[in-house]
Image 1 (tube, rainbow, N blue to C red):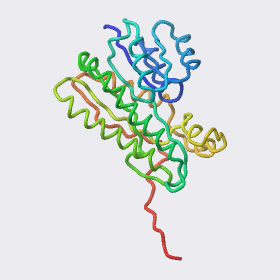
Image 2: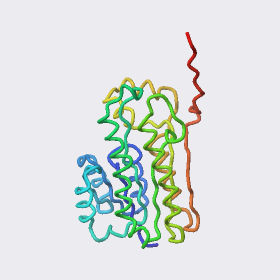
Image 3: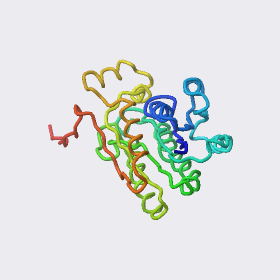
Image 4: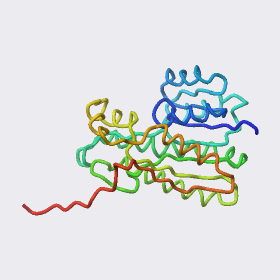
Length: 250
């Protein structure tokens, strides 16, 4: 079977790094994209010529295009795009949030994802490939402090469904993967590096791991080409839906 090619964003940690490793171990060519070049180089050192590293800030459209233009010829036939890069910032309720953080989440989770997808659609259509967008249960179930982060993930889920409509008859598969509580660098980023807060959140909860989501993406990518998984919602058994809240007069 001909070697296939994966492009994954946010590949320096968490779901992205685990996905890059899962596919590279299986012999795929992997284009690993992230801001942190040093971490990407670890992937390259681990897997050698099967991994091409592209270090850039996904919010920088010019840098994104330069990175795409610099992809070596053996990696250009991209079969699977995994839009994983994204982040949550802050835990405050909306009136107390930092507007700059809201904008950063929108620029990363929405604008950059849509831009990269648009740039790669001609190749994915030609290859009859697959798009896997990493959304979140936060896009379905709101929670206090989720505000713009949850809204950006709702966009990712709806964008995935809309792509399915627009790509009808072209053979391109589109999947929205929507994880719940997962122990990665997510909470460290969200809290500005508060390790204690991260430890408290995950303690005793048996959360999802990066490897769990990588295996999910691997399964989706390797299904027969006539099958499409529209959405996958994944939670640890210890997590369930929050109850309704009622504010009472005191």
